[in-house]
Length: 315
Image (cartoon, rainbow, N blue to C red):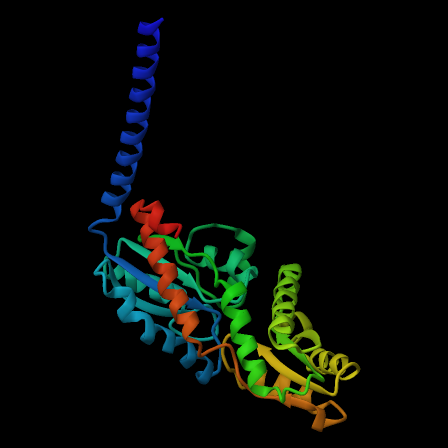
């Protein structure tokens, strides 16, 4: 019996050693695959005709570049616009190939899941090949490109922490502290992922009420879903004014665009009968240092994951 127990113990120790060796070997192989690679980072956003909008996104690149590249593992950081303007995603991916990059880490700077992040971007960079999506992109004048470099797409912006604090800060700046105010959140919206967008603004609203004591929250869309109409903005403001004395209007948009903040939302504000009861600033989520920090963090976590450093990647 003693001999049998000894044999069992030896077997268990051997299996444990084999398992650890295999894991170590797997992590080493992963690290060897990444080590020596020429790696670039591509910050991807929606794009806009507005130069002001685009500048706010390229400012992120300028701010995070040194932090992302300081380890020496990342060779360059670039920005690409999904539509409307250059440099496009395809243009930048071609340049990475021309310069013999082995891998490109794509960081989507979008609020939450949408058809752009789930369908368009994977097809644009060649990770997926959906004929219907590609045909739709072609009709919109968006080029697709299957790069030679391996492509890794990071998770989306961590809105539960970043956006809640951002919008709370902006609402407090416009509040008079009377306790008789409400906030109308105006976001782009998405037909395919409407449930996720509604959840996002509802979560933000609950956090906002808890942090500020603001009594009422409403929301409205201003994008393609509502055909860029100002009516949903007016409706969201009216909902607040039925319950509160003042309505604070907050654009839940990544950057400032003359068309959206300056026309669509502004026109909705102007349509309200009693202008004295409405407070609106044509601002955006950017600039926000926390978003820049998130970009650096998500690249670090992605690199740790690629190296097989699971402990660091999950911190």
